[in-house]
Length: 396
Ligand SMILES: NC(=O)C1=CN([C@@H]2O[C@H](COP(=O)(O)OP(=O)(O)OC[C@H]3O[C@@H](n4cnc5c(N)ncnc54)[C@H](O)[C@@H]3O)[C@@H](O)[C@H]2O)C=CC1
Ligand SMILES: O=C(O)CCC(=O)C(=O)O
Image 1: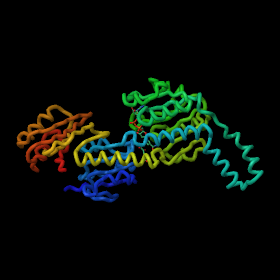
Image 2: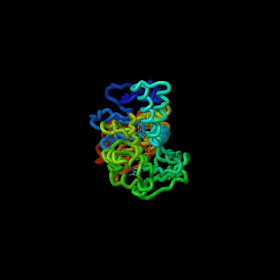
Image 3: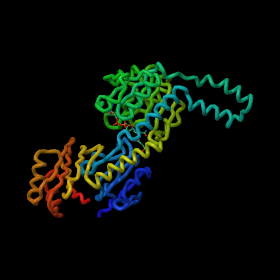
Image 4: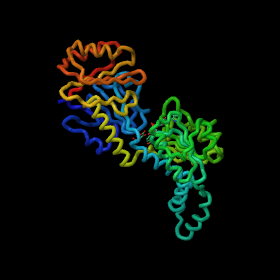
């Protein structure tokens, strides 16, 4: 029986890893010729793709650290774990709003400084606490407006929780899915332009992927639309915000605070910025959820060829037909591919028991269960079809 080598490039929760049957999988950080890679935030863009590699599973949501298009062209699916860490991020966003509204981070620093640096104690400390606290007076959330950009797994949870805290919530997502629309509170007002969202929001929170269309989404022009004293919360990715524009708006007082999860040299030391060390998904619960989903999807692909939650190939899931052999085929999405594939199977004397083919963008994926002996040369015959990228006999 085949043993699949799985390479882990970040700490993946053991709750997920223990789901891999050690008779079928071996796992390590330095494993040679990996069939599968499990990753969180490690940057794979400069990686030489090992010829052995069949799939990459991201235990998390964002895949901007992975060369998704390059892997698609090689017939290598990239999986992610939609929603598995959404609650963890939502809770940190709520914490971020409160940190900003009540100036908590700087207030706690002030108190620590009175004792640790100035050496105050007793009555002297009490006097300075009461004298200094007015500089940290904040505002309450009810009555303020929050603009949520991106109403996906995280954005919907944030929007609903913010409404429950008494905020007026506006949402913007030009590609809102029906599933997410069902989850969204009817009290969240959807707006149709990002400019309207900025001009009507005291606070803005970002929940979009980092792609070409979202890079620098928060810029000087849009910040200028916000009411005086606004707050920007960024738990999406650093590149979604033009940080220089944010820092300038903080310096002029147009913005009150910037709370974010993506340290940079200038942002991390600015007095009106609170920067966390990419903590959004760092809860035991989220790490377990992500690892379980990533591992299950990777194992299902390696053992059965099924594709669930891939960011570069369509969803293709087919029950195994007893007494058959399964073949998985990636090809360019162009006419007559299915006809040519089934012709090769027929020429090889194989009867098709089950067949499914789905396309998405430039590529398509076929799973076929065949009756009859699948000889080694079948793979070469399928690969000889113009437009076929990869073919695999799925042994188990
Ligand atoms: N700080 C952290 O540790 C974490 C950060 N993230 C980041 O948050 C992002 C979102 O995560 P999820 O909500 O789970 O993803 P998701 O895929 O469920 O939602 C993203 C939403 O953004 C929308 N969108 C895309 N482009 C947009 C645009 N230009 N304007 C408005 N909406 C747009 C999409 O239609 C989708 O509904 C991830 O891609 C990742 O970068 C996710 C998890 C943890
Ligand atoms: O794995 C992590 O801690 C980061 C999570 C994240 O940024 C994501 O899921 O997009």
